[in-house]
Amino acid sequence: MHIFKTIEELQTYLKPYRAEKTIGFVPTMGALHEGHLSLIHTSRQENYMTVCSIYVNPTQFDNKNDFDKYPRIVDEDIELLRSVGCDVLFAPSDAEMYPQLVESRISFGKLENVLEGRFRQSHFNGVGIVVSKLFHIIKPDKAYFGQKDLQQCLIVERLVRDFSFDVKIIRSATVREEDGLAMSSRNRRLSAIERQFAPKIYEALLLAKDMLLNHKATVLEAQEAGIFYLNSFGVFKIDYFEVVDTINLEPFENLTQQKEIAICVAVFLGNVRLIDNLLIELSA
Ligand code: PAF
Image (cartoon, rainbow, N blue to C red; front, side):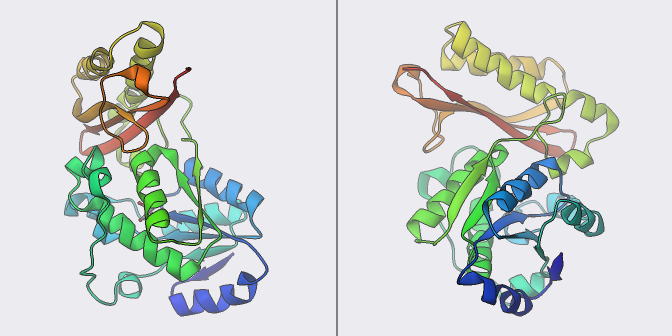
């Protein structure tokens, strides 16, 4: 695997391949897990070459503590990437990515104000900026994102549509631990006790789904059941537990008007903030 820290070196390496070969791109912030590896795997199947980036992007964090505590284990990550046959790693410094302060803003309208947007000031502006920069630097044919970050998938798809990026976005299903916990770099920060409670998040999603599909519950009843279930353990601080549409991630009341819905949740478990979601196709 080739490792590059500067844009110039990376671009010099990629240039000869661009005209004739396809490049798949998996952007990450490191602390890689099976979810990332499955994206690399898909990219390898679909492209001649796979580029992964590891960069903990400061502009998407509104909480300095969260940024400082974000796990950084690049040596382990490199070993993992080698083991799955990733071709190129781009691991730039802050000075390389942001030689000047970025004062431009990318706004995503309603989509940036719902769910995560309500709790993480300017988060999607930061994601939009860094993903745009990475797309310009790497010029991939396809880029791979995990569905655990559903809102991020929609934001990136909108970025590509609105700014005519020549890249196809591929969403991949959430990869889960055996007990159902969605894989996340932040899971490493959970204490042993917190880790035992963490699968309850997925159980709450399944409970709400079951109520909607099998018990004719209203959206409100399903949400309340999920919230009640999580609260019953006394360890979660819930930011949101919402049933939303899958276009703008907005709440709605009438289930019969939707083809597909998502149940989305964000909680604090101790100091660690975890998100998860379930997509549900409704039969006509
Ligand atoms: O999902 C992530 O890891 C990050 O938000 C991303 C897409 C790499 C941008 O920093």
